[in-house]
Length: 179
Image 1: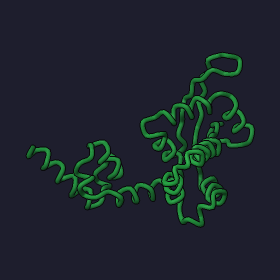
Image 2: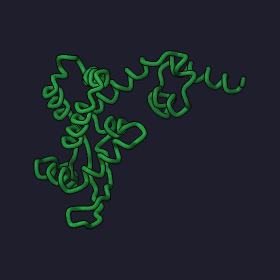
Image 3: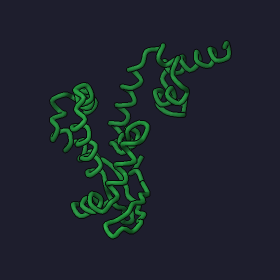
């Protein structure tokens, strides 16, 4: 997946309704920068770092991390280029788009997790999906909603699911027919 495109409508400093197209993408160098800045390398991976923040109920650290990710990911498209520079980050941060997008993300049902995962480098998304697959017991997989099961399995295409998820999917199907 390339950059995530968002059309954001907001009221600017002149009290005018503005709609702008923004792109968001964290590339490998952004991910490494964030790992070094947060000493994530010492914990081994970003997920461990996030779990520590959540377990410590450190909402300020989580809020700061989300903001940092948004500022690092914000870019503008110019032809085939995705431009990230201090002027673009400044425009995003202070022009009104950030305020609106951040408000949408923190009030989303998932707290913006889906958006933040979508802007991560591909290998991090794949690693998180694999770890999520391993994190559920069979009972949890059998009892969750169809939508949550598909997410846990790795997406809509069952051809990409591993054997465990295919077996659980069959059990779910047979269980729903028996009821």
